[in-house]
Length: 115
Image (cartoon, rainbow, N blue to C red; front, side, top):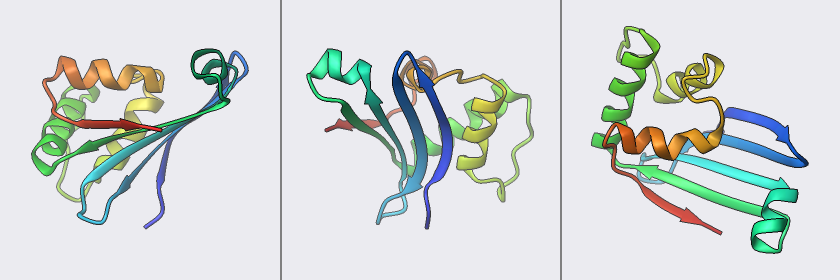
């Protein structure tokens, strides 16, 4: 299955993209990539990639939080990826840097990796 685009913009010379997809086990993976000035300043290379992985219970918690914050009734047939797209369109999540604080504020467990 193809990744669902969530965010794509250029800020201060850095292209920032965020997508949602499923791993082999069906877990939700929110993947980001920053290319340009910011990662070059911070890491000495122009590319930074990272992933948030959510287990099923954490994904359920995320769905509930997003539904509450969006004022949306969520049916079982609405994918979490769609809720995330809506959250970025309505600026519940203004940029990808809002994701980690959002997860923390709602006590949503996740694993994080970067490379």
